[in-house]
Image 1: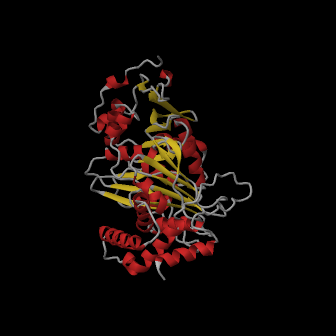
Image 2: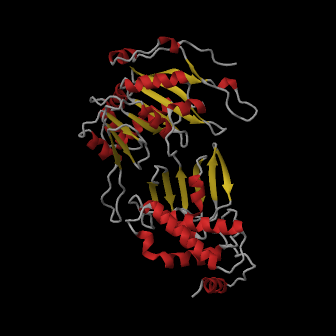
Image 3: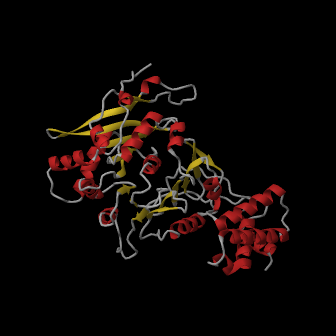
Length: 463
């Protein structure tokens, strides 16, 4: 059957004329989602896509072919198939259809252009017909859309299948990653009422350096040098903040300060960190299989890492009972560990760590847990996302010790919010020293790290 015949048959089966756009099916009861107009070339793309698959067949799955060779085959075959199509198309329409079909076969369909765009930091799919992106900290809707729910589900399966994960009715939520380390979360019906949802937090192919963060205003050059000294001096550091605050990016930068002659073990739910040292071992947690067996949690990986002779342990995020094992590691000679925690402030960070330790089911007095926390953690770097979409380190806080039953903290650097915002809504504030000198300066000196005490001179807050 020719391509034209396929197209005509597809149109007849759908009961529409070529000049009429397909109607959108109604949303679920109570849904308030806005439906976008259908793609007038949807049937053409489906027919061309199927013909392309028929022509190439097993060549698409030839393990011996490189990605470049596969792309060349697809694009050449695509040009031949479109050249035979008698449907009148403008040059721009032909180029667009060709690119969209190539993206669907070689990549992830309608979201592929947004994954290629280096300025986009997040791609959010709210059902097959709604795609939003985050650019420069702001969220915008885009015109791209999947053909239908089945098309979106195939794309999700392609993403999670490449890292050995699965998503189905028995396991309707999944965390995965792309080849470049970008974080992926997918959730499907019945948990997601309005259709499958896909969220991709992109990471730069070339990770941000400390110079980039200084340029963005995330931290000052003085604080950057101070944190460099703290990492090289083997302090235990927590990076805290809310969702989307930039914790993983900051963790990447802090990890880059680790000397290249040390053995680093990274532990993550989905491997995202991009370290450039030579001696790095990356461990990744594993979800349960379809029978509910085979799960390997971050906690087990932390325990195993202690047997791998690590100089440094870097945990992507502590979110459960792994907090207890992390504290034990920090308190048993594995100084210089770094991890992230979701929290609203440095004080909340300690409360969350305390709560997560209790998840382990160990019957420890609260005071004993707090003593573990105060002796294990040296520094908390807290980061926030501002209303203009920018990310800033707002607290660099030392964990001093215990006073009675309370863990004492002192802020070394704080973000000055009193300077307000400019005409475009960007914060004018900066990190400023509070005038307090950290207690761990002696520890740094013992490690051969000498910090200029003038950086802790008090800086006036306010206008």
